[in-house]
Image 1 (cartoon, one colour):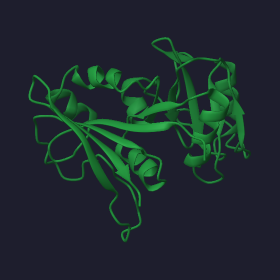
Image 2 (cartoon, rainbow, N blue to C red):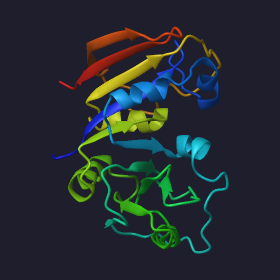
Image 3 (spheres, rainbow, N blue to C red):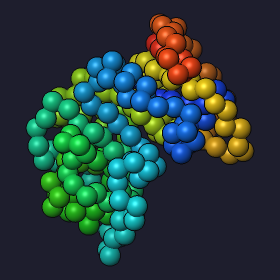
Image 4 (cartoon, rainbow, N blue to C red):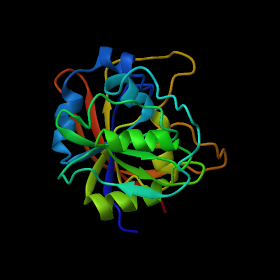
Length: 227
């Protein structure tokens, strides 16, 4: 399968929790500084993270829920880099077709309302619709590689998106910033979360490097081993 090289880059408390509001309190600019060093022109985030930082707060509500119902691709612009939003059922609304000048690509399932697809086209936002009931992540990555020219990409969470990529065998490297703080609250999302198969064996990691950041954060990089 031809797909991008994928690095999962995250910041977490020492108990592995990644709630955005919490990690904002225990970390600083080191997250973005280290992201630049990973040399990943394209990044991908899930619906919850996008809603917190970039999309409008109000969700999209279709007047007609008729699903798009087919696999399709629309590339509004050609670029050397993209920001990819994973939004299974088309809930995110956008103020523009880019974030800080980087074009958006929305990845949705075929269950997304046709109205949502039309809205994306009207706003000049690229999209990939793939997967009958849920997003087919491997196929979406093949499309990003073949149709959008993405060769290296950072997956920036949340936990369920990370878990989905992990379960699909799509993560090549984990870049983890372990921030100096403890969450401890019951029910908070972990770094990788949401995998339903309770008999699934853990993915082994090979340590590549460890670096101490000035504010007490530790930057750890691993390669994955799915064997």
